[in-house]
Image 1: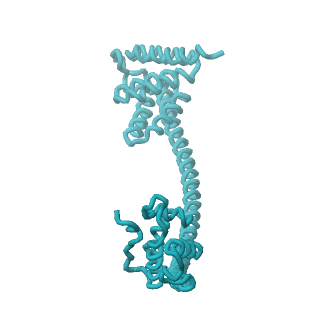
Image 2: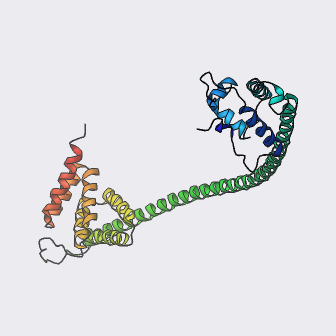
Length: 322
């Protein structure tokens, strides 16, 4: 390799003139460094070691990428003077070299100032934008708070409305329960009046009842048919709870014969689910004598399965009683 070839560096187009002039002089001075003891020209690394710097930094100083410290500049001048055999042979005095370094330093400081001014302007603009954004966010937050307050008021109104609706629903259910109870009582009173009339009048026609059927003039049957029609109408109208409430009340006030007739009437009307519910309620809530009489009446009506179901319902509740 050509001796001192590492001192030949190209400058970038953006290198300022003062920095370029200093680097060019440093390249010349490095070519005057003394030979190694072996008689060969020093490499870039060997030169860097002599100048107490690293190879990469020395290369950047010579390419004008970095501005070296004044101490490095003086070391380079001193080493070149010693290698050339005197200051008059290096081509530039130390004072002139220090002047070039001062010019490059001032030039760099001016560039730094311009860069810092630009950065400051950018920061001011960023601060202005941030302030505008903060104002926008605060305005939006105010809107959100207002919407939240409105939503809280609306929620409170809705809760009040729900409480009102619940109270109205309870009132309606109570009225409906009273109406169903009144219907059951009317049906029972009608059956009682019919029984009294039947006792006062002549005996029923001597038509032998068929198995599973009774004469339609029987007062128990008429009372049961009234309740069955009412329960069927409630269920077909989608008011299952009303039908169940009617059956529960009927199980409390109907006689065993009327209960058996009501079960048969529900079966004939294909209201099997209501019939099963009535059997369960009557067997559960009524004393054993009434349950036994109702079961006997179901047998007489030709419904032994319902009679057995009634007894099972009574047994399932009694066996857990103390």
